[in-house]
Length: 323
Image (cartoon, rainbow, N blue to C red; front, side, top):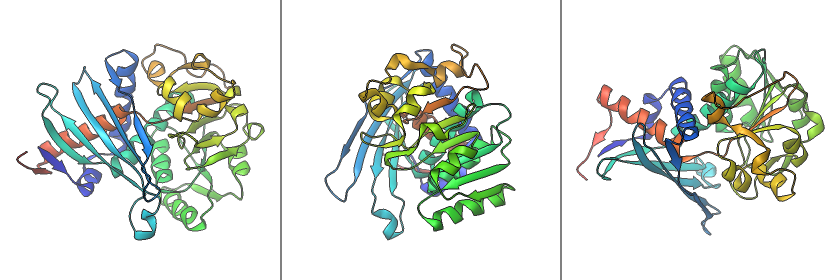
């Protein structure tokens, strides 16, 4: 078995490569060549943590494995990341465990990659203003991933923590971008061509009337029951795209509009994989408000872990252990 550390994972996988790999996973899902198995995600009842396991298989690669981990909200006070996870890959031929990969960085990269794919296929071609609500670690991945697919020139962002906002401002300026620290979520939403929400909020932060026609939204924060970033009326009014419809309606941003009877799985124009595969239409008019509800699926994780394993083999990195 090969073991890849957190530091090595950061060295081995570029966000541009992750975007291509995750798009492959979405396309494979749309063609029924790959599937995600039911998700386990539950409160631990200790340290206010939430723990989950996501599993899946891509028969085309082939690739089989799982990601286990979750959210430990008190870690930041101890100098550690709140999000902790690891991936375990199995040999599809024998079922034998073949790789253990630290997944904190890779989870951030695969989430940024998913929204970048949505932006590539759904945002207006001339989109140049990125709005980000939330300025934690994931916001930095979102910024870099969006730059890989659109000519962003300006970033408007809001966060409750001025310190986090300043860190994001520093990243944006290092990348040569104008940065505006907005005083409200409304100011961000009204300015954005592409709006990304990456918070752990459990109440709506963006009202329907704040979003201009033609905006593309990546709602990336809601991945558990109870989480919410958008007004359900905005979800109902937008043209919806999802990674998986059932997951979006149960634990994603769509869950609240679904519970209110405002949307159903049939409300989704398509999955992102269907759009990327050319099996369904994406944006059909410049004035549409498009919304990608990104809940995070196992195959996103597995393909970036596979990238790390393949790169490690080429570069002679990682520790090989007898298992």
